[in-house]
Length: 134
Image (cartoon, rainbow, N blue to C red):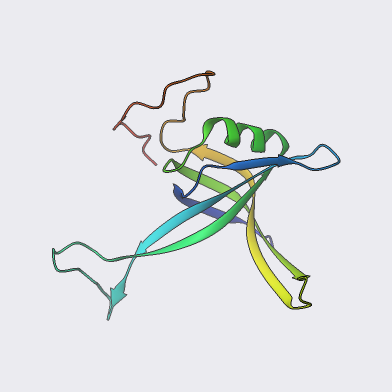
């Protein structure tokens, strides 16, 4: 069996990068995925007749070249498709309490909406409504 995850969603925060002492580049970001809420097999709707969505947040971790690309081109709100694997971790905090965590280690990331400009000194991003279909 293989550990494979594919998620499509919106980036929830500007990706944050850092380097390890060994020189490995690591970038983290949160990804929001949503799905419609159902009750007795029927979609739940709000007072205005819109479908109610349940949103889940995922911690995404990228390494080296992928990490640099994500940090350079991605920003909060972008739609991306992440392929990777689930990684569970366990540690003991400073108060000697056992803690657990879950993250997605990204292997590839596809941009489903336009990336931010790569030029230095760019003055922001235009509102662009054309998205890449998936």
